[in-house]
Structures are given as C-alpha cells and as structure tokens.
Length: 174
Ligand SMILES: O=P(O)(O)OC[C@H]1O[C@H](OP(=O)(O)OP(=O)(O)O)[C@H](O)[C@@H]1O
Ligand SMILES: O=c1cc[nH]c(=O)[nH]1
Image 1: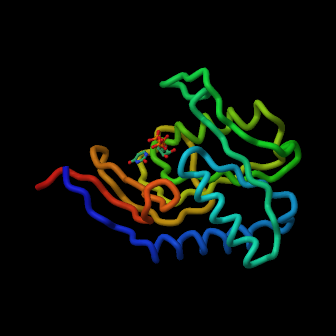
Image 2: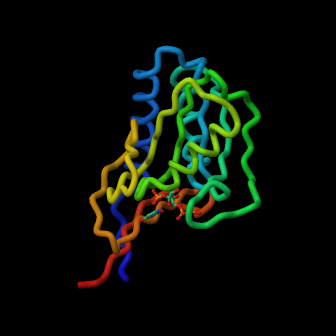
C-alpha cells in the first residue's frame, strides 16, 4: 500500500480557518455554542477552532472531549474517558472529528451526548468527508471532500500527536 500526501500543512490550516468562519456565520448566538471534539484527533481540531474563534471574535468557547467507544455498535468499551465540564442541555453543540466515513462514530457520539444532557441543536464539523456513508448522517462544515474507494484509507496527521500536519491517502499500488 502506497501513501501519498494530498493535503499539506498550509491547506489544512486554511480549511480549519474556513470552518471557523462558517461556524461564526451560521450561528447567531455564539455564546450558546459548545465545541465537542471526538477523541483523539477531533479534540485537537476542536482546540484549533477554539483558538481561531478567540482570535477572530474574542470569545472563549467551551470545549469538551468525547470518547465514543462505549457507544459504538461494533466495538464496545467499558472505559469512558469523556471530559465535558459544561452543562450541554439547551446548548448548540458543534461536534468535531477528523474523518467522516461510514457515520458510525458520529451516531455513537450523538448517543454519548444525549446521555449527558439535552442539547438544543447538534451540528457536525469534519476535516475530511471521504464518502461511503452507512447511516443518514452528513456534516454541516467540511474542510475537504475527498472521494475515496472503499479499500483506501485517509490518514490525518496532526502536529499535537503526530508531529506534523498532513493528510495522506493510503491506496493499493497500481
Ligand atoms: O465514520 P466512521 O466510519 O465512524 O469513521 C470515522 C472515524 O474513524 C476514525 O477513527 P478510528 O476509529 O479509526 O480511531 P482513531 O481516531 O483512534 O484513529 C476517525 O477518527 C473517525 O472518528
Ligand atoms: O479512511 C479512514 C476511515 C475512517 N477513519 C479514518 O481515519 N480514515
């Protein structure tokens, strides 16, 4: 399997900035918003969106970390490392993840959220939408639409955990 970089650091930064602008434009009550990053890389993305929001709008948006593993239909985990220190009832949630593929992680994330409160609204921001949905789920904010084949893989690297910002596609060599 060959790996090829399809998005570099600068393009990734621009995509995150654009998502942040779109969140500002589409939400009139920014003080009702809570960012919830899906572990692992969704949390770093949410932190970057939070930083841009501070730079652009001078607001400090609450941020939580959601562990979706206990709510997955395939791999059940008993450990739950979720950290949400804000009451989400009545709030507008922006779920943040790196890759949207089948949609099963987001379904689990919604389960994890409603177990903790009753949000007024839930939106979804993803860095990459690679298609192949298995559930009726779509993202409100998409950094990049990257059409893929089923047997390919999208690898998102983030400096905080991977030492570099990049998006790669892993595919069979022809
Ligand atoms: O739409 P889906 O089919 O659910 O796929 C998307 C999820 O897959 C990846 O997580 P993965 O389970 O690979 O774990 P990781 O984040 O620890 O790599 C990615 O971070 C998304 O959360
Ligand atoms: O290609 C994929 C599919 C799911 N999650 C990823 O991170 N990459």
